[in-house]
Length: 161
Image (cartoon, rainbow, N blue to C red; front, side, top):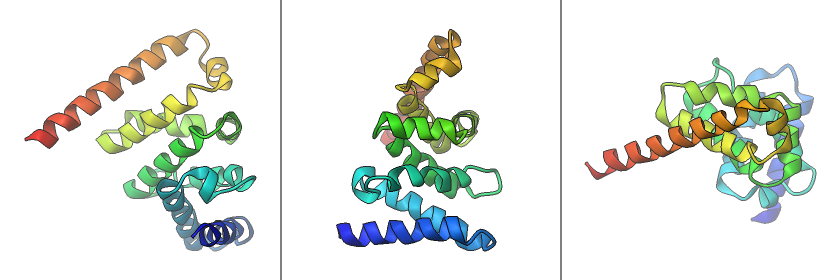
């Protein structure tokens, strides 16, 4: 299974990088990378350098042109990557992903908001987050912690009904 995921991830990355003009194929490849990133640990699904190369295709799914499912899967996969290591968090910041992810924290859809807040909480561990947010970072973190808590409470209440 590990070899299959490794080869699959490699070929999907090649499709994303080399076939620039085939837009539907690139989107499908990016969504497949997101699904692999959700179902398996990033260190297993994308070993070595491939973990950092998966960030850019996942960020291409974070646009308003894409469906909610594609956005949700990309956010979850980025959340897993951000929780993996400091260098993955740095790569997300370098690719300007922080602003894209933060945008979804204000969405009306609860699951998109929850995935975004989880990803932002993992990114908050980074030194670059502190540099970006400076003093307002404290209020920003408190706000998103509160939003995450209220969403969890709301989901528990709806599940118990």
